[in-house]
Image: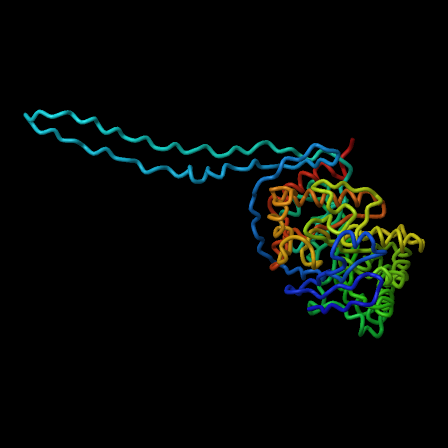
Length: 460
């Protein structure tokens, strides 16, 4: 379990997480968007990445219906299902068949013939509500969306077959799995990471010898990453997941660790993916102390990695928040949860001459645990938990489609920045305990259609 150890900064401090403790909450930055707009900068504490276990049982996603898309400049095309008649289920049950009672007429006794009992007719079973034809996403530029994969699942290869998956991040380090990924989609970038030792993160407050720790880490990593088959298939390697630096000294230690790791791996022809900071991390004033690592990565063909999540929608706490279902995005838009990366590049990296360092989001999506004081159900975690909120607030009645719409919005933002390689949706085939984040099923089917018309091999 991580403790929330916030430092003094010009960003508002974040209260500790409540309840669920596997992922730190970013909370209490500001209580209103107006307060955010008046602030000079913002942020919050990190959100630890879930440990990706080798197996998982996914939770099926219930289909509801999707509101028809409004006709405007930001219209998104998605499959939709017409809302069913609420009485259909009740009418579908047949009435029991009635039986006529025979009437006996006594012999030689004059009687008035009774009216014959008419056999009642059975209530017809209504036809199922027809599913209308889908409206697919229109063709467009190559996507920068990718996925975090917890285990080898056929659903991954369905997406890869579109040649639209920009990047895959995984702890599944089987070299044959990696080879199959590259054979299916040669242009997809593949990023690996060793599971954190004892499922703990690095403690920068006690890291006395960053360079020595980097050498030890590289020795351990090379037993895996140095394999000939993995060197042909993996494009880069992360180190520890979502480190938390609470002050300049801790950030300097992390920078020294990452810079040394980058140089040592580069000498073996292996690319480093540095940083891997969680949502809202690090505090903006600490970024200058990480520049030595960014410089080392730039000199050795490395990449910078960040995580960006928000909730109850992916737009929350950005300049496109409260802009309804199709908010659009421009290169000028920024945020403190998603689109925070633009603050980092515009305010820190570009002025330092490092604004061309390639960026990859090793995790992204909707995550209810990244911030307190947000709208929506307070116990919600992954995107599946927000489907009711989206339906009630005009973001689409069909949750899987509504989620892919939001991810497409983030894809549009990534495509506006040349330095972005891509971003990995968390998660496909999620590990046990993280099923509410899983996109396997209808959401993956919608994503597949989108990727098929935003492929790296598409022409015209």
